[in-house]
Amino acid sequence: MAFSYSSFVSGGLGKQLASSLGLPQPSRLRRHDPKKSLIPGAVLVAGHDEAPLVPQVRTWLEAARVAVATVPSTSVAGVVVDLTGIESPEDLETLRATVAPALKTLQGSGRIIVLGRPPESATSVEQAAARRAVEGIVRSIGKEMRAGGTANTVLVEEGADTGLEATLRFLLSGRSAYVDAQVIRVAAPVADPVVPADWATPLADKVAVVTGAARGIGAAIAEVLARDGATVVCVDIPAAGGPLADVANRLGGSALQLDVTAEDAGERIVEHAVSRHGGIDIVVHNAGITRDKLLANMDAERWHSVVDVNLLSILRMNTALVPALNQGGHIVNVASIAGIAGNRGQTNYAASKAGVIGMTTALAQDAEVLAKGITVNAVAPGFIVTEMTAKVPFATREVGALMNSLSQGGLPIDVAETIGWFCWDANRAVTGNTVRVCGQMLLGA
Ligand SMILES: NC(=O)c1ccc[n+]([C@@H]2O[C@H](COP(=O)([O-])OP(=O)(O)OC[C@H]3O[C@@H](n4cnc5c(N)ncnc54)[C@H](O)[C@@H]3O)[C@@H](O)[C@H]2O)c1
Image (tube, rainbow, N blue to C red; front, side, top):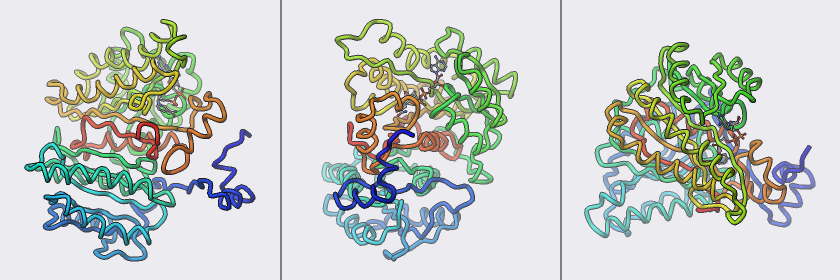
């Protein structure tokens, strides 16, 4: 078995060595378990001034059978602070006074969630400064959290308060285990949010298409969407036909052997999904490749193949998929932090993934997409343990896995859970977002 730093320091001599040398010691992250409660302990809910979101947050938590605390207690598993009412940087004291004592007693894999309003819609320069300051504080808290805890900001647009429930549930739960120091924007929903009959199966009766589903992150996405109730069309190249069929059969979905770069790939997906399953509600563009070389040595073939698979194919497929998607559907694109921070040897890959982020923002505002109430979002994974990262040289791989606030690589399921949340009909208030699933990776932080 290959050496891994995380396994080495998880017990015995490695653990002792790491603790005496002060080396990073990754904690086991709390991940979603459908049989367990949303969060294993009480959540402290507080806010500044009138804190307009606090009553609503309490009601949602009570409905989810989560105990609500009003003063920091020893058993607090999460903290939600409503700062939507701040007017000046002086008001940030509320955040310090609430979170500082809670951090001392927060349970493992604890959650800090700070609710604010977008700085762009501030009514004074002072208020804009205060609103923007929230991001800086929360990103710093992320770096100070211990034992697998995370800290995230949610900016709720004025008038979009009721759209927050899905995001709150996601961030408190183990589904967001590797989502850290993010700023999620909740806006007026593009279509009426639908609270699921059962939050354990928020994708019941949905038909989802996942490209690159034969292995790695794609197989995990297919699994999570199926676990949450969807029927999944698993798409991958003919050469991956065997594992593709295994995934589709295991999940009770169907397999479609298809190269996403084919000119008619979009039409073939539509034809398959409509004839076999009656339509499409969700599309996840996950298929992707790397062909790394320094730009000085980059030939046209490496350049073109990466841009074609990772970006051009999605643009082509969407011309057939958007008109075919059911009303209120969801599109999710898989980007990468390389598309945000850039990466040596990956000009082609970073170009394609930055393009995916640009496409996500623009498509979310497209007239046809808005008219159909479709959400369009992207995930930008950091270091995720898959066959793609197994190709990275040993030392770079081990360092890459540690270079984040959680001191470990993420798992394919972490990316999949974030994609699943984007696809809930309860979550139609989140669109045009790119959320990093990177454990607050230092790269491009
Ligand atoms: N692993 C990571 O750390 C990481 C980080 C950031 C982003 N990503 C992105 O996540 C996605 C999945 O990555 P992964 O690590 O699971 O990779 P992977 O190589 O393990 O799996 C990719 C899958 O896509 C399929 N595929 C490739 N080209 C295709 C084509 N032309 N048509 C249809 N299917 C095709 C492959 O056959 C494979 O099954 C990719 O878009 C990748 O860029 C991964």
